[in-house]
Amino acid sequence: MHTKLLIIGSGPAGHTAAIYAARADLKPLMYEGFLALGIAAGGQLTTTDEVENYPGYKMIKGTTLMDEMRAQSEHCGTEIVSQTVGKVDLSQRPFRYWIHPMGDEETLEEETHTADSIIIATGAKARRLDLPGEEKFWGNGVSACAVCDGSLPIFREKPLVVIGGGDSAVEEALYLTKKASKVTVLVRRDVLRASKINARRLSTNPKVEIKYTHQGVEIKGDGGPRGLMKSMVIQNSKTGEKEEIPANGLFYAVGHEPATHLFKGQLKMDEDGYLITTPGTTETDVEGVFAAGDVQDKKYRQAVTSAGSGCMAALEAEKWLAEQEIAADGPEADLGAKKGKPQANGDVPEYRSNPLL
Ligand SMILES: Cc1cc2nc3c(=O)[nH]c(=O)nc-3n(C[C@H](O)[C@H](O)[C@H](O)COP(=O)(O)OP(=O)(O)OC[C@H]3O[C@@H](n4cnc5c(N)ncnc54)[C@H](O)[C@@H]3O)c2cc1C
Image (cartoon, rainbow, N blue to C red; front, side, top):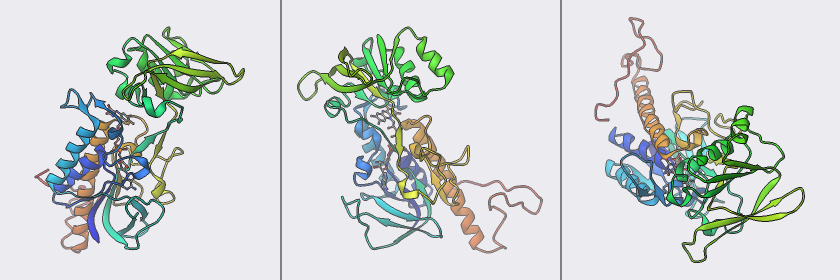
C-alpha cells in the first residue's frame, strides 16, 4: 500500500497532525498502535484520569479527550489503522515501512508499504520503578508528572514525595511546594545531579526535605479498588534502615524513554534518544520526515505543546509535499517554490498554504 502522508502514533501530536493534514486533502494514514510500548492507542493521556489544563475543558477524562481527538481525525478524513509500525527504512524515497501483526511486537508482516512523507508522533514513556503498591495507587497518589497532576485536590496541603536527583526532579519538587504541606525528595546518590542553581533553590526551600542515599521501598494506602495513597516506606541505602513516612503522593522524576527505537541509526537523536529537529520546525535530518510531540520534546512534555507541534508537522509536511509535486512537474512548472530556491527576481518564494486549513 502507498500513502502520501504516514502518521505514526496516536497521541495529541499525531491526532492534531492528522486533523490538519486531512483538512488539507492529504488523505493521511495513521497507525495508532496496538498497545505499542505497552501504551494504549491515544497515548499517555489514556493513563491518567483527569486533565484540567487542556484549553476548552475545565476538566475532562484523559480517555475521553483522546476519544474525541480520534473521532475528529476520522471525521476530517484520516484513515486510522489499529496496528503498530515495526520497522522503517528512511534511506530511499518513497520511504518504506512494515507492520507488526496485531498484538505481536516480535515479528513483522511480509508486505512492504511505502509513504512519500512521514510524521513521527510516537511519544515517550515516563520511567517507573515498579515499586510494590505502584500499580494499585497509580492515578490515586502515584504520578510521573507534577505539572499535570500536582494541582489535584488529593495533593493540596498534603505531604508528597519526589524520587529523582536531576533537574526535572528539582523542578517537579519546587512546583509541588506551591501546593503541598511538605515535599520529601529521595535521592539515590549522596549528591544531586541537578545544576548548582537548581540544587541551591531546592535545598533552601523551607518546605523541602532532601533525603540523600534513600530509595522508595513500598507505597501504602487505603484498601479497596479506589483507595488513596497515604504513606510510603523508604530505606537508607547506606545503613539499610527503613522508615514509613506520611505521603499522599509520589511523583517519579526518573526520566522518560522516547519511543525512537525504530529510527536508531536513521535519524539524528540526542544522548537520551529524543529526535532532533531543526529549531523552530518539526523537520528531522531526513527530508520529508517530521517529528512532533514528546518524541522530540524533552522540555515541556504536555498535551497542548504536543498538539501544537503536531499542527506544525502537518503544515510543514503539506508544504514539503507540494514542493515535491512542483519539482516533479519539471523545470517549467517549478515556479521556484522549492525550499530556499531563488525566483527570477532573486526573492525566496513565499509558500501559499492550502486556504482551507
Ligand atoms: C500519567 C500522565 C498524566 C499526564 N497528564 C497530563 C495533563 O494533565 N496535561 C497535559 O498537558 N499533559 C499531561 N501528560 C503529558 C501528556 O500526556 C503528553 O505530553 C502527551 O500525551 C504527548 O503526546 P504525544 O502525541 O507526543 O504522544 P503520546 O501521548 O506518548 O502517544 C504516542 C502514541 O503513539 C503510539 N506509538 C508508539 N510507537 C508506535 C508505533 N511504532 N506504531 C504505532 N503507534 C505507536 C503509542 O502507543 C502511543 O499511543 C500526562 C502524562 C502522563 C504519563
